[in-house]
Image (cartoon, rainbow, N blue to C red; front, top):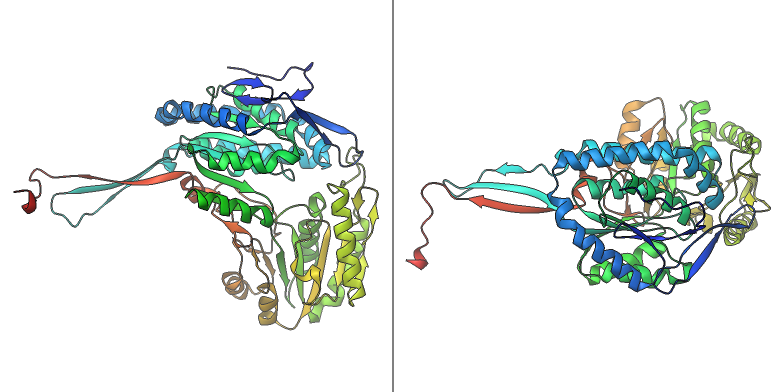
Length: 495
């Protein structure tokens, strides 16, 4: 079945049970281009009644999709990857318009999502493989099997709108679940294009459903998703503030949530580090997509022996990064999303400088953009020391030796990503094992992910691991089955 939004229809509609539909009250809303301020897209403004219809469609489709042979699910998911690649340029254009990310960022999103669908397709058998467990009862065979949970609700953010679909939807579908995906209010067209690719690939009606909503309707739409009895898993990517609310709501309904939340990623640069590599990786991690990512480098912890030279090189690099109109092929960075982000970043810089920090580069807005910013002399009493900036703003903290570097790195409640730069690999491995983070990259950037690898964090960065084998298992239930031998056990109380 191929369902495509016609070029004449400029409003992104809901996808429910295989058909494109208006919201129940026919209301729509507009998302705006972060750079120009003009309307980027229009979409249906769903209400709870639409959520109920979407979940009911997914519930009806679940038994057939779950019972489908794994190789058939593999074929469909592989085709989704092909359709995503075929429409990568279209998707990149939508991402630029809706998020302000340059074309390269949009193409990267589309490419990563296609690869994650292919990885999920290749893992359809592995995902549901069980095991035989030796029983303590003579003659009994005990097996543990994995099976799909039912309907999965996926709440997707705007900052990497295609890439982050890949952290939940492919795996949920691969193991036989059906999905209701709540699009970001900022990127309805991007998420609509992804929905079109799924339907073009032959996904049966109701297996995947798309809900778009206006920002003011988000709380009631998410509440309706979580509260519906058919929804058995909730995957959320977004801020720690909202993640706590999601966790409370799902706990009230005794449902499992997988939460990908904020970050404050540290990079440790020790005295013997290759500074060229450390500066390059730190700048890439801090400024890519204007720092608007949970994995973005926010803290660079540098040994005093190399701090001055590191600061000089990083500040010089920051001042040479071109930013501006994302449609300009020379622009590496586009705008940040929203004037509130500009205000928040400006306040963080102003407060830090007033308290004694030193501004080495940037620190000022330029229209809807914010210049790549480097602050040094940051101390524990400054807001920027602990708060996630979610912008092109990185702090440099000077320390004496590896142990102090580790202590400062761990002095934060975000446990997501980290990196270590030292030529002493045994020391790097030791630090990596002791750093409070879900991942640590030795001589690498804090950004990036691979489909086979576990992804996730702890504390304020959430819980659950949507990547790799464990990521597939997040969307399954474990069941114990026993088979008695030729001589069944005696049950004295029944004799």
